[in-house]
Length: 120
Figure 1 (cartoon, rainbow, N blue to C red):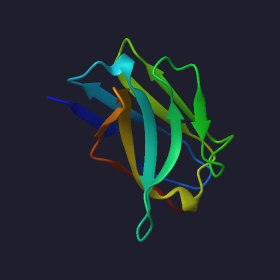
Figure 2 (tube, helix red, strand yellow):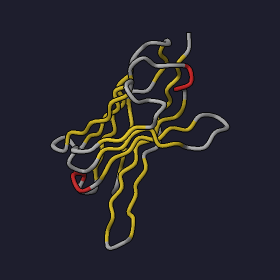
Figure 3 (cartoon, helix red, strand yellow):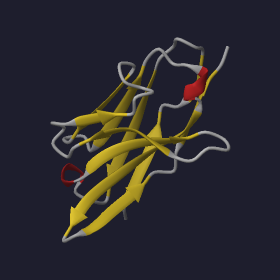
Figure 4 (cartoon, one colour):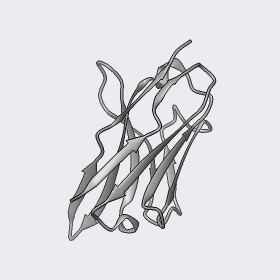
């Protein structure tokens, strides 16, 4: 049974930090690229950061570059999103996603999301 379970969300003041975790099970974690997306109320879900299966390449949305860091621990089957200098505009539900290309078919799994609220 495939599972992606996010944790670490919560309420934080502007300028604060949070570290999100995404614990994976039920599939070969080290074969999948991992991404973090977010969706604010009334807005479309957007890609925040992505990391390749080996962790060698990372990509970030312009809005979070220099503030957020994506990482992974393949031994622990867990992906992380370190979020620093948080702004009210970062308020959203954050989702992790596992993706793999298999014979021209994309296999993707989503977590259930964790709420991040940045407010004073």
